Length: 176
Image 1 (cartoon, rainbow, N blue to C red):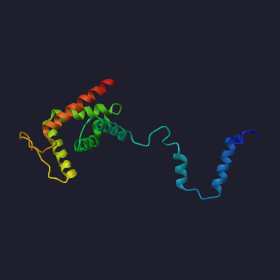
Image 2 (image 1 turned 120 degrees about the vertical axis):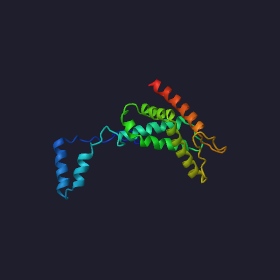
Image 3 (image 1 turned 180 degrees about the horizontal axis):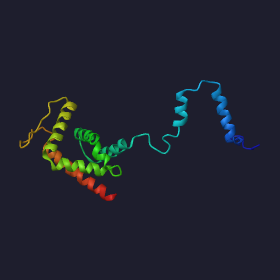
Image 4 (image 1 turned 90 degrees about the horizontal axis):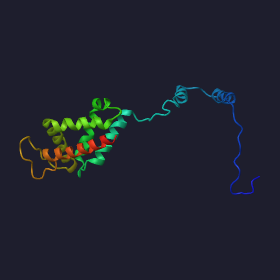
């Protein structure tokens, strides 16, 4: 017996061999009805062993969204939110870059920055969301027209933010 009563020795259990374990299982299951749920539970226990229960594509989109959140200053959050949506909808591009999701995001940013009509659509969606978030009428800037003085998201301001985000992304990709 251990002289230290505050920390008793742990009991040692005798090892149960595989045959005994199988017999115990048979005894337990023989006393009740065996269901399909039992089969699934028994066989499914190792189904995800070593794998994340979160699908790979969801993980990749999450990585991109984390990059956006940490690298795109956006006071009202409307631009970030719309970019999250665009990333979520860009499944085909992300699927082509399973090992490098930020590379897929780089392609998305490039397509926005190089195509004014795509940029204008992005800004329109950001303005709409901004209006919903603030319960105000949004200020839509038309291509070639000057922005409204109270417009938080103009074509030029969003373009500049995306250029800065793209530069940060290039630095991040160079690290890898």
